[in-house]
Amino acid sequence: MRHLLNPLDLTVDEITDILDLASDIEKNPDKYKEACKGKKIATLFYEPSTRTRLSFETAMLNLGGNVIGFSDASCSSASKGESVADTIRLVSCYADICAMRHPKEGAPFVASLHSSIPVINAGDGGHQHPTQTLTDMMTIRSLKGRLENLTIGLCGDLKFGRTVHSLIHALVRYTGIKFILISPPELRLPDYMKEEVLLENNIPFEEVSSLDEAIGKLDILYMTRVQKERFFNEQDYIRLKDCYILDNAKMAMARPDMLVLHPLPRVNEIATEVDKDPRAVYFKQVQYGVYVRMALILTLLEITV
Image (cartoon, rainbow, N blue to C red):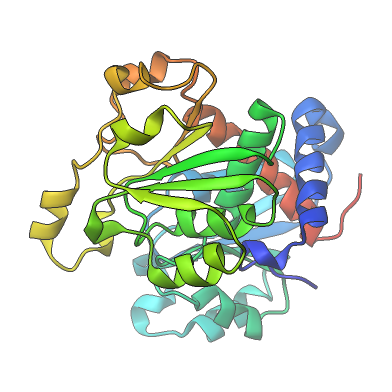
């Protein structure tokens, strides 16, 4: 039995296998529509989510399985003080696999220590979000044709953004990757990420505060929102939330083949006028997320079709 808590839990070859399987699911959905008949996924979401929770649930339903779980900690016995360890012990009696989102970093890891079913980290605090990373990688590979030799701009909240941290961890294992880190000083990538991940792996990167300065150099622009729920001080959030707004004027400075990704939800960091630009692929990203999670469920349950 395996868990997925961090993108590094998968080797590069295993990621390739999952993305290949996801691509086959995209092309041949009927082939997989009863692959998980009789199986159940538990979606344990201790903080709000739309895309990730519904994506996991859609993935299992598309595979012919069933879904149980909760969408808010207040709807579970966590509101009575039940521990993550006890929750996963009982859920292991009901389901075959579990996807957990939790505001505390490391909570899915704690669950994995007490679980008798595979646990998937669906986001823990500002730490990791491995299934979003697999989704991002499928989006890039499907639309760019490669995961190597890319200049990737990460823009917005790089301090608390778990999707950014996960993506960096995963992509440093590919050749020819360069990052341009675009953020205000208060939301820069944490020093431990720069030192232990980028510098340790000899990955070139630069830090800038201007999106205008960077956008023309990019193959991929990965936008993120400034997350109100990660701030202790509302004044700081209000001051920083509108630092970067991508609009048609900025898109005019970009390469004709640059892709814009966003893990969603967006607030106002991407103007709705950009949605019509063919380089804006964040809604395609959502669909790729279903295929990736279908492939991951099959992989962790060791089901072959």
